[in-house]
Structures are given as C-alpha cells and as structure tokens.
Length: 224
Length: 230
Length: 84
Image (cartoon, rainbow over all chains, first blue to last red; front, side, top):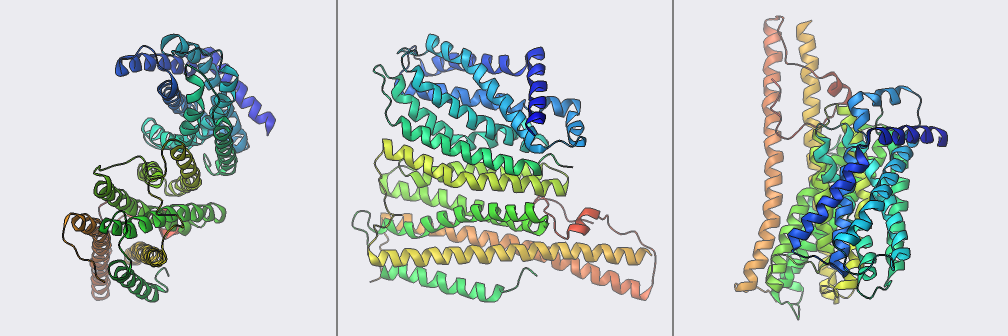
C-alpha cells in the first residue's frame, strides 16, 4: 500500500512541478487576499487576534482552492477510470492525495508567511516561529486529510467547485478555532504561548479522528 | 414494513407532548433571572439535542448501510438527517427569539451550543445539493452515507472546539443545559426532551412509511405494465 | 400555578412555540400531500387492472427505472414530477 501511495504521490508531485498549477495559484491567491484585507480593514499593521484571524482565514481559503483542484486532472483526463480499473487500494489513493495536499500547503506557507510578515504583520515573525511551527504542521495535516476526503466526495457531483467550499469550510471550523486561538498570543507585540498545549491537543484530536475516518471510509468512494 | 409499531409510538408521543406542555406551563417554576421568557428553553433545547442526536444517528445508520450494502439503511439515514435539518431550522429560529427576548439582540455569539449548532447546520444543508447532484442511485446512496459519517463525527468535535473557544473568551452566560437546574425544572426539561425524541421517532417512521409506500406502488405499477404488455 | 401573562415576554414565548408547532404541522401536511398522490396512483392502477380484465389490449406503460425496481426504495428530489 505504501508503495502504491508513493507512486501516485510521485506522479502528482511531478505533474505539479511540470504544470505548476496548484501551488503558484494558491500562493498568489493568498497574497491577493492579504491585499484585500489591507483595504477591507483599512489597516497597515495587524497584531494579536486580528493578525491571527487574517492569517488563518486566508490559509483556509487557499486550501479550498487547492482542494478543488485535487482530483481535477483525474476528472479532466479521465484518469480516474484508469486508477479504478487497476487493483489499487483506495486507501493508497487517499494517502497520496492527502500527502500531496499537505506538501502543497507547506509550500504555500513557505511564501505566504514571510509575505504576511512583510505586508501586514506588526510584530516580528521570527521570535514566535518555533511555537508557530507545530500549529502550522498539525493544521496542515487536518486540512489535508479533510481536504482529500471532501475532494473525493465532490468529485462525482455535477458542480464540484460549488460543493467543495460549502462542504470544506464548516468542517474546518475546529481547525480554524484551534489554530487562530493558538496563534493569537504568539502574534502580539509581546508574544507568549498561552494555552498552546490545549489548542495543539484539539488539533491533534481533530487530525486523528479525521485521518482514521477518511482511511476507513475512502474505500466506498470512487468505487465502480 | 416500516410502519410496524407506529400506533403505540404515536400514542406515546401524544401523551408525552401533552404531559410536557402541562408541566411547562403549570408546574415548572418561573426562573429568577429570566422570568417567563425562560419557558422557551423547554422547546429550544430539546429540539437542539434531538436534532444533533438525529444527525449522529443518521451517521450510524450510514455506517450500517455501507457495511451491509442494504440500501434501506441509507433511506433511514436520509430521513433522520432530513428531519434533523428541519428541526435545526426550528432551533435557530427559537434560539434567535430567545436571544432577542433575553438580551435584545436577534443573535448572540456567547452561547456555545447555539453557535456550534449553526456551524453544524450549515454543514448539513450541503447534504441536499451533494445528494441530489449525483445521478446514479447506488452512488448517490454511497456518497451520502460517507458524508453522513464524516458529518456525524464532526458534530462532537465541533462542539468541543467551540466550547473551548467560548470558555476562553466569554464566560458561560447561559448555563441552563448543565446540571444546575432546580428539581422541578429538571423534571420538566427531561419530559420535554423525551417528548421531542418520541415526536422525532414518530415523524421519522411516518416519512419512511410514506416513502416505502411510494416505492411499493412503483413496483406494482411496473409489474402490472409488464403483465399488460405481455 | 398557571403562568399566562400576555405582556412582552408572553409574545416571545408564544412565538417560539408557534414556530415549533408550525414546523410540525407543515411537515405533516407535506407527508399528507405525498400520501394523497399515492392514493391517486393506486386508484389509477386499480382502474387499469379493471380495464384490462374487461378488454385485454397491448398498451404502452409509463417508463420504468430498473434500478428502482431492484432497490425497492430510492430517493428522488422533492420536486420531481410524478411519473406518468
């Protein structure tokens, strides 16, 4: 199973490197939204809960963009039938797609975070960075697992671009709550790690539940 | 036969609803803080609990469907979720009325149950477009079940998350759903909860019976047509 | 002791309970509409059978969905027109 997953993942990553579709689009989208927030809030410098909120809402929306494209190549080229005809373990497909999405999100954040620090953030980003990293990684894991599940659910509907945001965003509210609450004290003028453990715990719980659930349930999707 | 046991169930429902209404308006004492407005609590909270329970039950039935391949479980799951969405509308409207009567605003973010309920409700509203945009009936049933399971698991997680957030930023303003209810109020609440649950079960059975009757009718029609054409 | 004040608070409480009752009644009415449709179709089928008993002919029946027949139960969108 791991080998199959790795093969599919390698295919997706190679495709992305060649076509450069998802990651640049998600990154560009993030930067654009920062600009929107600058004008919408009429602020040049954010800190604390406002900074945390803007950062995480933007990341969530970028994730929606990424999820909508996750099965796009399969849908368009008809590759899904090829995958289904081969005796491929659906779980491998889920792991591959989830891992791809996770890596895409990390790549986007590599650019989006410095950009955020440059464009909108008042206090520095370097100081709270070590505490910020586990939040980002755990949140990305949750985003990836739920994103892959929703992508598969929406893939067979008539209007996936509509269904994906409608399904994904409510499901991600716990991630948003935990991540934003964890990040908020880290982005204050005087950073501190209040309650970080509690929010990391919630993120871990969410990740465990949804990874296990998606693995259990993915077999029933994309069947034929 | 989906209508098995319907009569005793509906009788129990009538008795429970009548009893709870009597208790609400003639037995339960007036609340010290909120006065008569607090009576809304006896219809709003049981509706919320039953709706959430209905959604989770829909998820469990969906698991049954996927494991057994028996599509009747998907229909049971659909009706449970569908009924809970209707109740959900009621929860949000009565919750809004309660907020307005208590604090003068038509919505408050302070009550974690109401807020987390809104999020769950928004999620379940997507059940309809998801379900009905899939043409193939077998696939429709399967995908709906997957959704029902994911969403059912989401309900407790979401509640925990919202509760944690609220307890951190806002003090618990309405601690009515906890154990700190005086005896008479608690009895009234429990009876109201039982009545709402029984009502849900009755309506669920009712809709399943109606759906089954329609399906049987269709089968009869096709059989007759085949016989006529022969 | 019965509590029936018809002041400010009473209106809100009454409103909440009215919402609840209205939801239930509307729901029952919709199920009722479905049942009347079933009744009508049953009557049509009965007439169909009687006519065939009197004068057997080859007629074209309404369309049939094979997968429905197998499943026995399917879920159609609420606003789907009755099959003819």
